[in-house]
Length: 148
Length: 183
Length: 235
Image (cartoon, rainbow over the protein chains, first blue to last red):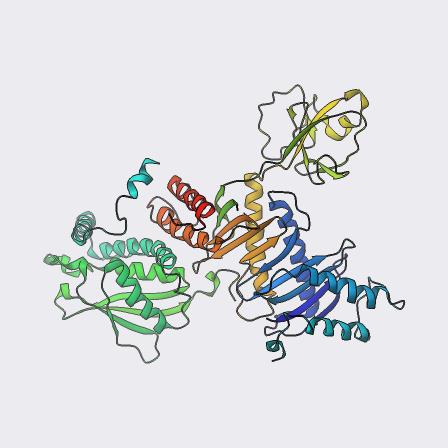
């Protein structure tokens, strides 16, 4: 199994953080445009799901898959959005995204006095990036093929 | 409801070959009567074939889930001859006369069930392209999977040739018609 | 295991077939005295509970009727004949109609019996959602980190799953099911066969146009019934 990339958006739709562990396809647009597209896309998926649902939703949109990848979505009540792409053999990993939020994001960003949870995470947030990489690469879904 | 029940008792995918051949024959004869020019008849047959092709392709793909999108013309030729013709006409034409560029090939139709009892009438009827419907059907079917082709008979046993040869030429890929969400 | 509904979308994103198999009916009627502890908001389809969930009435539920009289968007008219269908979001306001939120904040109108529920999608909304899905399908492919991705094949929420199969000719077959339903892919393949039989082989059906063939609907229904009972769409 493979982990591709992670997007974190704040509640204003701004991309706070992006990191990729594997990406075979490069998109034909700038990164900024890609973030905008992803944010708008997730917004439409959420509203689509809310309008279509035959019963009352609790968490709402969880994931979708195509023939080769799966997009997992987790949103905190504060409006932070975590989007993790993996290959499509991965099961529901909502708890992992929650853990990523509670142990990595909260500990190394929110609790960092130098930092506000609404700011874009720069590369000088070394501890956060280091802990995140460690967290992701210790997941059972992160396999050897990831490193090729 | 009652119609569905009746349907379960008959094999909907089979009809005697003779009934089919006679139906097609009666039909071609009728439009030959209705139109003044043979060219116009050929055009109508092609059009009818086209309308069949654009529908038949989905039937074919629905029943052959392993067939995917073709990535070269040789693959197209193979699927067309070995699966398409086999399913709908019960014959497997041989694929020959590839152009050097690989964008044009011939299908040799052996034992075409459409023409089993047919002799073309004298006079202008000799110019009739009796099987033209097949060309239209191929053109229509391939157009639905985004391949534009030209399709015509270059030899016809009904006209005294040794064999019946159908020429298929690749024109272009219809990129605009590619369904969205396909990379 | 339940299949809620089934749709066919053509190459340009138009909804050409829609069939509702089993959509749970969510409706609750209760009598209230003044004041109400719900906070309402006006929405396109009518007055919606925004805050103050209680007694099974949830945030997001719409007011469907008051004292047995169906609402019309954000208004209610007690003197109009109740038979008028309010299917298409008509916001009719006549001299005898009341604004619902104002009506419910006047203590003189209590006690009042209100029916809450989740309104069904109307034809227009289904068309819109189909075309939204059509573009979502394409964007999912565009945002793929991996080469040669298709669009969305399976979308999961905590309450339902959406499955989509797109034929090489570009027709989408979509099924909405509960989260436990299995073998939906087989149902979609089967519906492609049924489409090629009962729609395409019907000489009076025009390609890309809405499918009005009763036999198609009947056989799709059979396939869904069979899937729910035996786990296979084939009988």
